[in-house]
Amino acid sequence: MTATLSPATVGKHPCPECGGDLQWNAAKQALVCPYCGTVVPWAESKAGQPGGAMVAEQDLLEALKNPASGRGWGDAAAGQKKREVQCQSCHAISVFVDGKVAKVCDFCGSPSIIEHESSNDAITPQSLLPFKISDGQMRESLRKWYGSRWFAPNKLKSAALTDTLSGVYLPYWTFDAHVSAQWQADAGHYYYESENYRDNNGTVQTRQVQRTRWEPAAGSLNHFFDDELVPGTTGVHAPLMRKIEPFPTLTDLKPYSPEFVRGWTVERYQIDLHQAAKVNQQDMEQQMRALCAQQVPGDTYRDLQVGARYEGRSFKHILVPVWLVSYTYGARNFQVVANGYTGAIAGEQPYSWVKIFFAALLVLLLILIGVAASR
Ligand SMILES: [Zn+2]
Ligand SMILES: [Zn+2]
Image (tube, rainbow, N blue to C red; front, side):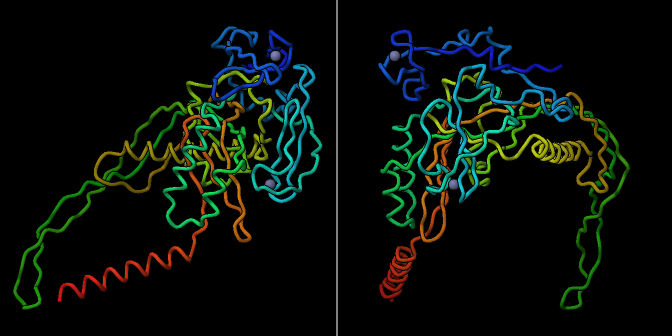
């Protein structure tokens, strides 16, 4: 069963006043005309289909076998103009729909970006989480976050106040699968025996010793994986992304529509469906092993073997909103990222050795004073 959301079914939302292209506004949580300021509420029905059927899963095996299915951003169909640029420094590829193209790379701040051949082998994002946190809210919480970084250089704090903050849609893959697994293992049950031993004085003492009784065990279980996430981004440093997850993809996804991404940067995925599906398979195998391990009776286990069948694997290509501050300190590039939906922040920071030196000195002084006072 292949349910591809063709971009042709995605309606255009012209401004009712002037006919201009509407853009998603995070602060207003509505579409706003950049020309005349008219605010238009977002309505799912405008996208051409009744809600529910909108955020569709695609068959994974079908897509891997037949790479042409669901490809292309369908720009011609939806009447959008799209440009791609690639950063020569961090190699991130940014896509811009209708209009603005950044002068510097959003991911590393490098000005050396060049036009990227926008090949049509890209899989269309089917759905996305629109920005919920506005840039105003973001600056406010970033200021607080920086304030809590004691040992960060002052330069970092000023970075929060200037306009280096960019809103970027990052590519993610989500995977579903039904898994039926069978496992067998040796289940270990603890028991205790009394044992005599001689202590250091040569006296005979008694102590309890833990032993394990092993018994063969087996079982089976079924599990449904729903929207397992695998990042397709290479622009944002991976450990940071893990820290600002989750993105509520199960409940809050909207069908892809150009209004949501117009005026924002979209990163084009560089971890493709093949690679992502492999990562997902490993993730699932690990989780299945853990689930089976929980089923083994007793106190411990050994020789756990799991055989599993993965059926009905499907995927979606989605975009998630992220606020990004990128800055260079010394020769290194540091990123601070925030979940554009939940507001969760994670960041890398350089340490100011001057500040750490004086803090250490202060601690030393306090200790010395403490010693002097106790005499
Ligand atoms: Zn207008
Ligand atoms: Zn870059």
